[in-house]
Length: 231
Image 1 (cartoon, helix red, strand yellow):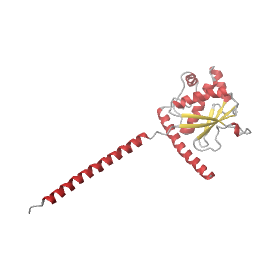
Image 2 (cartoon, one colour; image 1 turned 30 degrees about the vertical axis):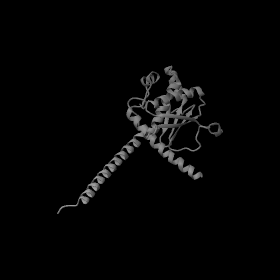
Image 3 (spheres, rainbow, N blue to C red; image 1 turned 120 degrees about the vertical axis):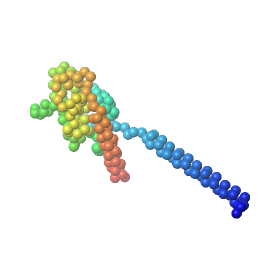
Image 4 (spheres, rainbow, N blue to C red; image 1 turned 135 degrees about the horizontal axis):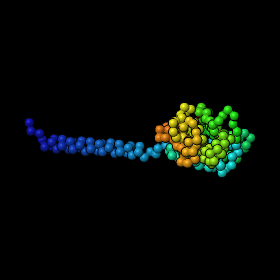
């Protein structure tokens, strides 16, 4: 049976329309995929940073503390971490005199307490309490070591601060044979501290960055909940 020309023409038009719709849909999906890929790629990686609260019970001078902070910050910068410091009030001091010290603490913060003296049984220049996120620094021990080596005490203290902060981020059993997390600070290690310095290795640096990003997310969640509760 012979088809009528009108029917054939209608079939051709429908066929071409279908091809055009398929091409449009395919192009739209490709564009959407490209957009999603660009959006994912454009998302900035969350910055790894640590916020350190400083309690200066030893009443060290601002100059000494600045030297300690600068060197400790450099050690963490080489690990891909930015350090923010905030002086905090001691027992009877007015909190309004320390506007940089947050009134509410969360998991994104760690604390350093600098004491002038330590008990005779403690020979190290610092100790860390991982669960409490607090590190103690003992100025008398660091000053004694610095005098023996004829080295700048702030430089030695900066490495001690970085070491103890490392424990707060890596965990209690986080000593390593070399680098800033070495367990025994003998004369050779102390000499190296005074020369080129000690740093975190690649594995430690990666772990610290991951831990800090996790704490930042948790801390932000806590702060948001507190703000909602205050409204």
